[in-house]
Image (tube, rainbow over all chains, first blue to last red; front, top):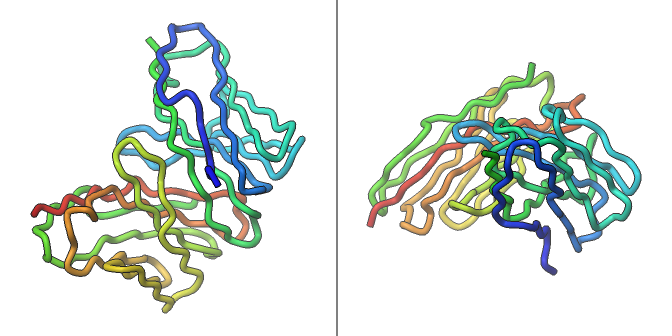
Length: 115
Length: 110
């Protein structure tokens, strides 16, 4: 199993550009998540999905959109990129979710710079 | 508001020098506390889940313990390959999602 994969690994965007961060998992997990990680801060949840066709906002959703058309894929869309979106983005998945505490498995991350 | 803090922010140890990392949490009912290891440029790697006060889990040189207010990650006789950032996360009873702490950056010198 490849686990959770993310592309691209690195990307530089100009202010106002848009892009999609790709995430895929081959563990047949129902739950998928997008986080951002900024220096000195804990991981912050952007969006999550409990299954194909179902998504919901996390703690910091502004400026992002997601879709989940299949169990395997969970892309994150950035519209009108801003410098505040410079960060490292991680995708994660888990077999199930609340109320049962399941561990999440993370991808390798995408480092995004907006200039 | 659920909160997770970790201390120290950074820790430098000599190889073989045992120590502990702290994760303090404030949640309205704990469902689970999770420890992760993160190497530079990589995603977090799952280590342990603890569910209730008094519980302990071990893996190689690492041992995680849990009380009602905090968790400790004890590192016994660390090696340079244990150098990483260690993250703690909690899931509350009513919460849908994890709350992560900022991490402790551990350096083990040979």
